[in-house]
Image (cartoon, rainbow, N blue to C red; front, side, top):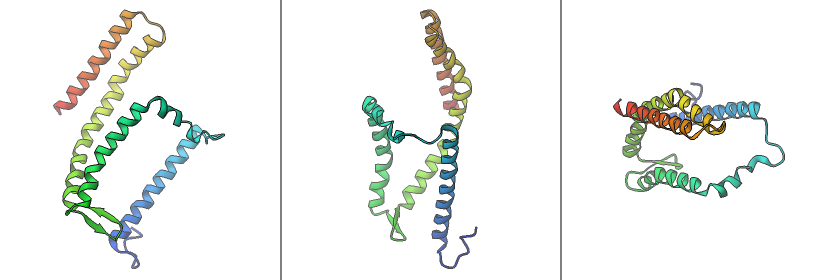
Length: 163
């Protein structure tokens, strides 16, 4: 609200600046919460995750391909005839980006329903299954818990698909 009425900023520039300030504040608060809980890394541990990339390179590759597939269409369309340049810095395609935004927005409630249902119903079956694995349950207990786990997962997927 403070930035919108400033004479030295255009309204869209003040909106973007305000949004960036808000995101910076969220990032700083998040960083403070993480460091209060886990503490600051000691002795060069900031890149301790790198060996896991070598061990789990397939997971890294799948994630990279997924993110590339998600953003490449945007970049192609922004460079095409629908692309509009804003403030000599940002490029967007109003026709495509607005539709994409609504598409992502439309799946948000379904994603939230699925996550909440998985966290509440699926976790119980998940905890029981891994309890038998870690506490050396017999094969019958593990197989029964696995069937129950899959049954709950499929039920939740069907429940989300019905909505």
